Image (cartoon, rainbow, N blue to C red; front, side, top):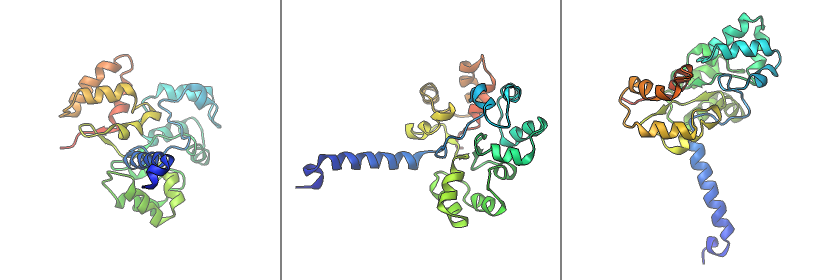
Length: 222
């Protein structure tokens, strides 16, 4: 008799482990560890992060969508927040960087990323999963650093081929929600980003800046 039949809990544990491994492998937003996305965070959440305050939180909200951490950095610098303070702040709040399309300037704003790590990250492009990213950063630094940096980055989602577990990894930043999964699937096949802007734009007429934010997380394969 097999061990899974004699011990049903073994079968359950195996199934759960398999599911978790599949979801982790399919995730395209790095595993989050409490990092706050300034485009979706509440004003009170942002204002509570030193050295931010209510006025700066309001300015961040008014600037949405903040499509790059470079833009965020410029805005905060313009508010008189010194570079060392901004670097410390980015351990808590950040605009995620596209692993395949992100600029050097964006990657170098991730706390702890230097020229060596930047080169290692860029060597693995184009990324389809996080496995080669983890391998590259681990080789250049260590596994703990790969895990830490992963929360700052994402792999863009191909609109015609994504699966639920891929989109679910974006739920915490308001992209992989039930609504967007439904709409992104309903309009398949996607043929152009103009189509995306037209169809998804119907749902965000009252907040048009949201369309630009959603668009940075997706693409259409040629």
